[in-house]
Length: 233
Image 1 (cartoon, rainbow, N blue to C red):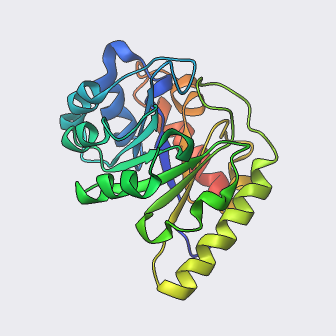
Image 2: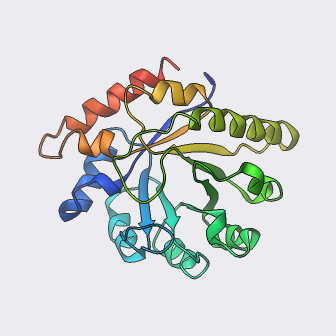
């Protein structure tokens, strides 16, 4: 994994929503690579969060990629709204789409980069016939719906299996597909997660929950600790 670049994507689910633009600016200035944006509909998952208008509102606050994770069902109606709102990466759960290939095409045809999300118990066979439409794969290391959950250890084995599939695809086609992980990522486990094959790390409470933006150095410190652990992977 030493030849791969590791990317940190703080999840706004754990940010201070009363000062969201400021939170985005501070965390990117502190070294975040992406901004992760969790969209929940109280239907596919038992929680309700934010939509395209909030994505559009934070877009002017950063040039960093916005990574939108759609936990909604169905997905096709809302995908164009997020493309228009400025999302760069958009992913959805295969169980939430009636036609996975069509949903991926909607993202890519709109200019976004498309990903599939796998819950802890979702099998990887959904990858079999859509690899050419994928730019990234997101593995959930918790059950989706709420922040602050603990990392599910079995995800390490699933990460390794996914990494093997993506590497085999890259060897055959020359196309690199990013592997992202979301849920319970912290300073004490990020190195093991990286060794299992992850490249993009979503961290919510580990970054926003560990410190608040009143301290202009708080996010810098926790991101530096995460990167120090990644350097050991």
